[in-house]
Every structure is written in C-alpha cells, then in structure tokens.
Amino acid sequence: MPMSDNRINDAHFPSLRGEMRYDEPMSKHVSWRAGGLADRYYLPADLDDLACFLQQTANEPIYVIGLGSNLLIRQGGLRGTVVALHARLNDLRLMEQTESSGLIYAGAGVACAKIARFAANHQLVGAEFLAGIPGTMGGALAMNAGCYGSETWEIVAQVQTIKRNGQRMTRSPNDYEIGYRSVKLLNLSSDEIIPEWFVGGFLRLKRGDAAQSREKIKQLLAQRINTQPLNLPNAGSVFRNPPGDHAARLIEACHLKGVSIGGAMVSPKHANFIVNNGTATAADIEALILMVQARVKRATGVNLIPEVRIIGDARRLTL
Image (cartoon, rainbow, N blue to C red; front, side, top):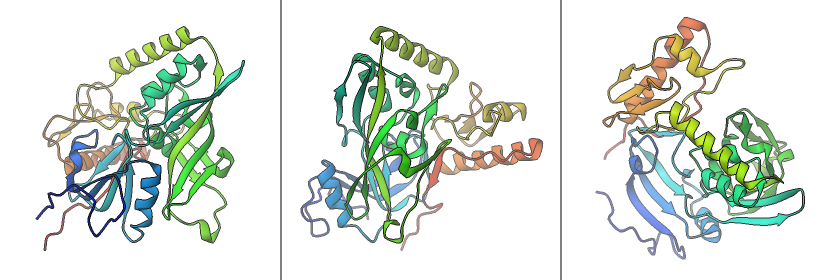
C-alpha cells in the first residue's frame, strides 16, 4: 500500500530537511499530464540538502526534473526517486555588470521565462529566446534548449554541477561537446564516470535597451501563442528537426495532423506537438510517437529522433 507519510524524518533518510512523498503520481508534475507513480518524490530544501540526499541514495535510480516539460513517464512509473528542482534551486542574481555586458546566475530550478524577464529588466540582451522555452535552467542546460534561432549554450559562461556522491563542480563550456539538443561531458577519466546534474548556470549577456528587449519577449510570446497548441497539455516539440529540414513539415506532409491514439493527438495547429485531449495515457502518447516515426520513415526515409525524453516502466509490477 502507498505510504501516506510525506515527512523524511525517518530511519531511511536521517538529517534531511526537504520534503519526501511516496508513490507520487507523476501526471501531476509533467506537462503532458500523464504518467505513472514514482516510488519516491523528493523536494530538496536547498543545494546542501540535495548533496546530503544524493550521498544517502548511492544505490538507487535518481531522476532530476524541473517543470516536467520535454518528458514522458511511462504508465508503470519510476523505481527510485524523482528529485524536483523547480522553485527549489531558484536563486536568480545579477553577479556583475559593466558598460558592455553583465553576468547572471540562475539556479537549475528557475523557469527560463523568468530569466528572460530578469535579464531585460537589467538592460541585458540576448536571453529573450528563453521566454519561449517551457522549462527551467537545469533542463535548458542539459539539452541545449533553444528556439527562434538561439540556443542556451550560446550565452553560457560557466555552469555548476553536482555529482552523485554530492561533490560540486564548476565547469566551462570547453568541458562539453555541445550540439543541437545535445550536451555531453568531454575527456572523462575513469574516476569521473559518475552521474552528474546541472544545478546552476552563469549567463554572459551584452548590455542593451531594456524596452526593446521586453518588446522582443512580448513578440516571441505572441508568436508562440499563435503557432503552438498551448491550450492543451503538451511537452513542446516532440522530435528534433532533421538536418536541413523541419520535423513539423515532414509530419504534416504525411497527413498526420489530427491523427489520434486514445486521448493523444498530433496537434492540428503544429504537427510537431502531441497534445493530451484530457484522457491520454502515457501509453497512448508513446504509441502515437512511434506511429509518427514509422509513417515519416516509410514515406520520406527520414528517421525522426525524439526530442522528448521517455523514461519509466511500461507496467508496474505488483507483489
């Protein structure tokens, strides 16, 4: 039976200060509003608490999430612990400002749209595109999120990470192989092959006109509203754009707009979005992703690569 106690002052997790929930419905925490249960769901009090937690859970799976966009959790749920950083690692500060530039620090749990507004309000330009990313700083760093012709790592000066053993690191862009929706650590030695997560980023931005920056954000948000199905639960773009083309164009060319499986539907508004009409299960969504891939591959020869991350068990085992 599910455990009802959401406190962590028990024998399993001594000395922690955050909030632990058991058998947590992940449909409440992902933007598709579908998915199974997580064995445990932890909201750390702060970075020190997160480090302490990681040190005490060395032998179980850990999944770190922000706003739960760009993520599909299968109906069988997740074994181990989901660590939720949104509104937890939420430090947002202006570190320095010169006549030509400024440096902002954003914790992994800060919403990207908030960073865009913060930069504009401090006469810093170049982060406006972040207003169109429905996630947090941590997720944007992990996948080099981008839109409207810009990508996250174009403005990154340094990042802070935390290893599975609780060790904290400061890294530069030179430590990573950065590509389209891809970020990978370079030159790992045998003692560095330890899971590691982003906990914050330093963004270097140019000085500019605050009013123009705010107006650009306003225009980008209007464009997003006009072109994306924001009235229904979705996870943003489902597939990466193939080289020299757009996933949405290929999907639309295959006449897949409006195609449904269960409560999941290829959006009639934007072909690279799959929406939850209100009754979709994670299985419906995954089946539709696979159908779209197969149809596009058969018709065009292009293998669409999912941009969304799919994790978890298809079925939950019961004893």
